[in-house]
Length: 82
Image 1 (cartoon, one colour):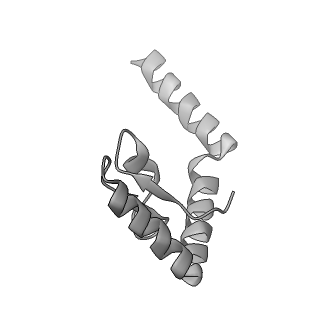
Image 2 (cartoon, rainbow, N blue to C red; image 1 turned 90 degrees about the vertical axis):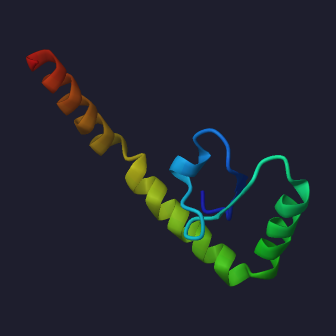
């Protein structure tokens, strides 16, 4: 949706957010670092806008329904042929 992101480095988050290009990742359990990075994001609106645009562009590619359906069909075709 084009919103700058500061997220914690847990679960699958690092696999969908490229730190330093699409947003910022911080260690979990450290509210001081989280607060500092949120403050940094508000203090650098031009960088925040760039993160948001980069993340949006990546999501459009990553979650494209047509290409994901094609990839899934290819996978199932290989499985059934195997």
